[in-house]
Image (cartoon, rainbow, N blue to C red; front, side):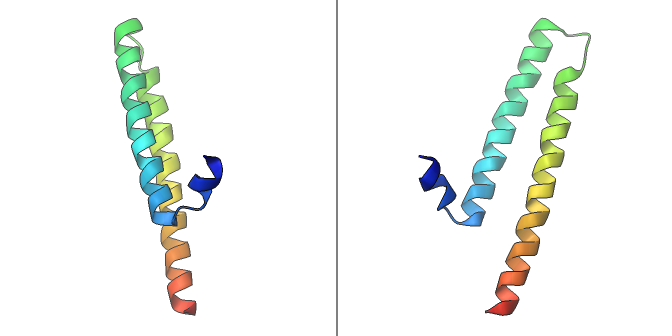
Length: 71
């Protein structure tokens, strides 16, 4: 399975990562709200995952721009 994922185009991998981050963030926020409503650890974890995704998006844009200029 990992080999199939690695062979996907960069855009498909980015979309896959975005979906995983959204689902994981939602799950963490639900767990946070159910078990520790007075604390915001789920929100901070979701922010960290979103920041990671923003860096992945920047990498994708840079790679896409550099590969289209060379072709």
